Amino acid sequence: MAEIDLPSVKELLWHKMRGDLTTLVPWFASNDLLLCPTCGRALKYDEFSVEHIIPQQAVADDPAAVRVAISKNMRSGLTLLCKRTLVFSNKSIPGHGCNSWKGKYYDKYIREALQPDVLSRRFHSRHHMAVMAAGYLGLFREYGYQIALLPSGLLMRSQFFRPNSFVPEMPMEFQMLLTGGPPESYTEDDREYWSEPFKVGVEAGAAYVVMRHFSLRLPLSRDPTVPLARALPYAPPRYRLRLNLAAILD
Image 1 (cartoon, helix red, strand yellow):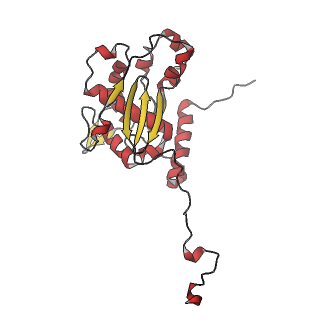
Image 2 (cartoon, rainbow, N blue to C red; image 1 turned 45 degrees about the horizontal axis):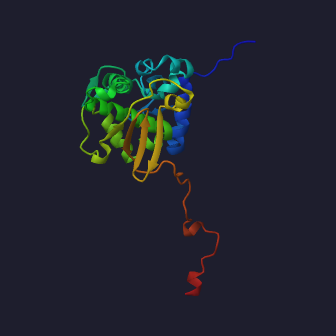
Image 3 (spheres, rainbow, N blue to C red; image 1 turned 90 degrees about the vertical axis):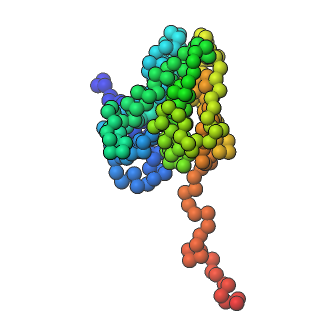
């Protein structure tokens, strides 16, 4: 039997993200574009590439038993980021867009943060910013474009491009990380720790994101678990079927 062409990981992510975006912004249904979840530019398919949120170098450090039991992509968490050249203040930034930006400024520090001896190492602001960037992408991966398009999403996307310190608008309550020690070996009881790199919880005004053994709070303008209204909760008077007798009674 002839082999059947299966869609690539990029194609699957593209169609999933396009489907999500068009439910929020119907304008995108009439074009072939997608918003980059970090810079927000509307770009074509060829201008995106697959991004491992937890970088491949980091998951390559996982215990051998983990690498055998759970796929690299599952342990990383995947999304699409743009590879089109970034431009700041009319100056082109060398590299391949947001994909290169994350690779240059964050991937090394995410890898270092996930090392088993992280608690005995010097942990500085670049590690904090890297975990926060990964946490935002993990939150986006869970809830899609409603995260990126919120005012809180704009704040986190602005933070993504400031790798050395917090943006002034970031409230103090979100400038904190909690961490513990990772499992020293793989057991079936720990499978979820490795197979699902991000666990997300929501409460009023905040999202709790756990990335392996790190926990952080991220700002959230709206609860993404509450369905968006797709119709007006009331009908304007001219569209009501019931007669308006107010004028007659007067």
